[in-house]
Image 1: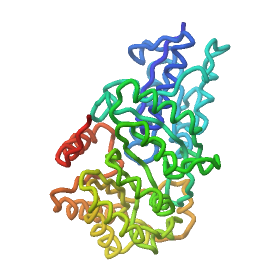
Image 2: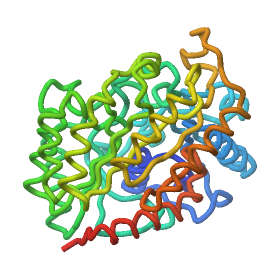
Image 3: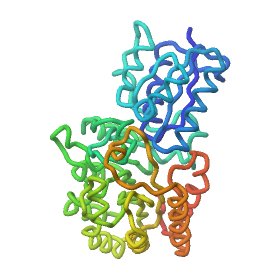
Length: 389
């Protein structure tokens, strides 16, 4: 009987995937070891989306190598910084889009992966920033439909891959029947859901889930998709079952959005966001912004900061980071020094923190540092009267 140990710092979609791999190994007779030292195989899930998380992931691999166990590396880091992974000489690697290949770890499996259900929670309670068993995740897609030149995420997560609608709705029904008070529709690029399948769109899926679930959180929606579906999506957001709406804008500057290969539509969403805010003070509206993007002026960044203070309850401020394999490295743009990016990001956070009702934090932190943020977010929900029946 093989003993395995899983350690990771990956984001929610891949924590759910690792949970399913964990169940697959157990279903085929493997034993979950109490520590890496007791394991025959160490499976390390590695994020590479931010340098802080990349450094942490590399540390996890290095620690696993000290145990003498067979070290298996999985995750976005494999695609984002392959040379750094290779330098640590793991025994096998699996890129995030190829996660199903981890079934090859089991020779002649008695239970196939198809017989192992999708998971809706993390493997360990300690992995939650704030644990609430009534909130259940439903992974609707992985990968990304965009091709932003600066973004390391796409290198790691790959192309869009949507789950079939019937699987998602069945999972929602089962979770609701078991007493879940909130369904979190999750993914890497949820707004693009279904465009690879040519079936239902994201708003159509949300509409169907609303008929089943008591409450819903909508996460990881690129502003491009929010704009494209604005006539279908924003009317749905008037339903008080939707408690949380995350739309990722990055900047309001049309010029910068074009440089980012994104649609220059954030300003065009102003009216929709304003109407939503006026109609629903109880909904939690969240976003991410980038500070220090190449050629970004302080005036453009100030305009973005002023924009987010009008509608949003939570803002993650990301200082621009360079990754060697991203396409922006070949675009011949002038990059700001890290000191300048840090200065601007610090000023942005300071400005946003002057608005008492706005929850502000830096993006890309080590996972554990976000515990206080999640607690603050939960308090914000309570202030807004977001009660679960």
